[in-house]
Amino acid sequence: RNSRRIPRTSQALYSHFLDGTVTVQGILRVTAEALGIRIADSYEQMDCWWNRKTNELVTIELRLDDAAQKVFGFKTASANGSAAQPALVKSRVNLSRGVDLRWENILRLRIGNGNSIEINLANGVENPAAVPLNIIINKINQQLGATGIAQEKDGYLIIASATNGDSSRLEILDTSNDTANILLGLPPRTYRGSDARNARVIGLIELSNILNLSNQRYLRVEVDRNRLAEIDCAGANPSQTTPQEVCNAINQALAINNFATISSGRLVLNSPTTGFNSSIALQTPASQDATALLLGELTNKFYLGQDPQAAKIQGQRDLSEGVDLSENSTLQFRVDGNTRVTVNCAGESPVTRD
Image (cartoon, rainbow, N blue to C red; front, side, top):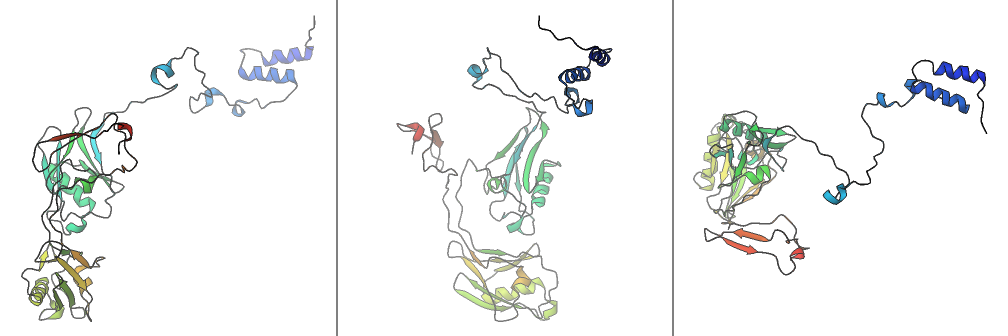
């Protein structure tokens, strides 16, 4: 029969390669010799499975009787467990530039099975119009008597329970002047109207006890579109003017009691009226402008009040192309304390309901 005899030299060579325990390296060398080729046969030059950093599978062949697709709806999947985690809420809003808490400034929350706590985040702060995130975090932790409940990550506020696992619980609750939407991006479940508000200006800087108004002494203010005054804010000794002397000069010039006050070292201007017609306009005086010296570098120079507002809900989803209500179609609400109403919002075609 057709056969090939191996030369004696090759036999000796094979015997040398295979002498002792057969190895991958020896088998490859014998094969290369038989084929008359040269190979890189050192272990450092080979892709050996035992030297790989990961247990990598190059290909996967499914069993012919694999039922995963029929049972689960997919052919392959993987899942990993995780360590126990605390109940946690992360803000959807970046707060690194500070937060305006002049109006909505109350955060109500409950951790674990304890009582709910309301925290006034604007109480005692220097400038409620721009409260820094670190001040907000400190106030939350101080009120709760714990550290690490409120944290900051990349400009976002994180509030977490102190415990891990299934028993960990954190609730953000509705309240009056609720700031949860501003801080965390969590819309409330209860919406309230608001009373009429007056126009207000809060200075950005904390005034020193003594002000030098020798060269910058005038403030030009229009109030409620009907009172305009260019005010000399300097005291009897312009280089030694006190913040209270500044307030006295402004109030006297406009003939409005307590229009100008000092709060936490900052100059505050309050219109005496409320509603849309309430306004404060900061204009440029003819000379020696003291606006920036007394109020800081304000980007806005015109401030309006607000009329009474009704409770209102504005959706955050675009419904112009319809919405699928085939599974969830009911809406329950109550207006002004009346009886709850449940509405089925789906029509004849709930999948594309307008």
